[in-house]
Structures are given as C-alpha cells and as structure tokens.
Image 1 (tube, rainbow, N blue to C red):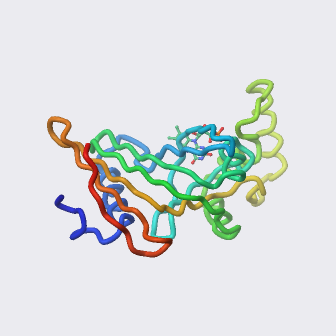
Image 2 (spheres, protein in one colour; image 1 turned 120 degrees about the vertical axis):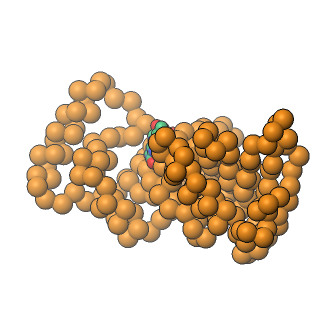
Length: 200
Ligand SMILES: Cc1cc2nc3c(=O)[nH]c(=O)nc-3n(C[C@H](O)[C@H](O)[C@H](O)COP(=O)(O)O)c2cc1C
C-alpha cells in the first residue's frame, strides 16, 4: 500500500502520476482509454477514445455527437472508462456521468487540431453507414474546397464530454497474481473520497 493515501490525496493526482509514467513507457497513445456507454434499455457498447484533459473537474474526450456513443450519452449520461497500460501492467477503472464541455472549450481544442483532422470532422458522419470509401473521399474534397485557405470552424455535431468520476479503481500487477486494487469512492458529490482495498 505504498501510495494508498500518503502520496496521493486524490485519485486525480494518482491518475496523473500513472499517466506520466505511461507516457514514458507505452509505445503509443498512453492517453487511449476504453469508453463504455449504455442505452436506456441496458445495452452496453464500448470503444477507444483519446483522453484530452484530466483534472479535478473530470476527464475530457472529444467526438461526433451524432455517433453511436454520442447518441447513447444523450439518452444516458452514465459511462465508464478503462485505461490499460501493458508496459506498466496497470489498469484504472473510472465510473461517472458525463457532461458536455462548453462551446468555448470545444472550439479551443478543435482549433488546435491539424487542418486535415478538422476537415475530416466535417466530412465524417461518424458511425453511420457509407456507400463506400469514395463517398467519404468526395466529402473530404468538397469540404477542402469549401474552406479553401480560410478557417475551418468546429461543426455543431463535433464536441466533447467531461466524465465526472464518482468511482476509481487502480489495479497494479503483483507477483503470483496477488494484485493490488485500490478504490476511491466519492462521498456525496463532495471533494472527499473513501479509499478501500479489494481482494484481487
Ligand atoms: C486508440 C484510439 C483512439 C481513438 N480516439 C477517438 C477519439 O478521441 N474520439 C472518437 O470519436 N473516436 C476515437 N477513436 C475511434 C473510436 O474507437 C470509434 O471507432 C468511433 O468513435 C466510433 O464509435 P461509436 O460508433 O461507438 O460512436 C479512437 C480509436 C482508437 C483505436
């Protein structure tokens, strides 16, 4: 229990420390995180996204709001995330409800993306069926021509969410599968966390 409470007073500090280590050791995408959403009818779905912000206010990712995940989060904001860093033999589970980021925050992040990615956000009807790759390439050509050398604004259907964690579990590999599991459960929407350990 070396870093259960003494070294990290909040789960965010611990997550940031583990992320910093993963940045040194992972071959690519240390911020890649699996995101689980769920329909109101109880059918879950799962995919990877890139985490673009992590502090006490929550964990931010960006996507197309009309995608499957976007539609599921619109009907049910409860979500779960899972980081797994093979190089560190660690995982972090996070659960909570999402909130949309502000338009200003989404604009700022969108503006930081490469121009081709911004055009791609206009051309991709994410998660909807396309007749073929040619249809997508035609849309990319159309938006490339439309925006010319001018600014590429953020499409209304492209924005971000902030997952507000209510629960974290930090899992760390130990010899003979005697792993370490430390959980942080938020106390009634407050800033205090109940720290526990689980059997592996
Ligand atoms: C490593 C990795 C990172 C990804 N990051 C994102 C992301 O940040 N946002 C996003 O919308 N899709 C991202 N994707 C694609 C999604 O996994 C997924 O294919 C897409 O968002 C459509 O998901 P949906 O149909 O469930 O909405 C990423 C995929 C991988 C493998």
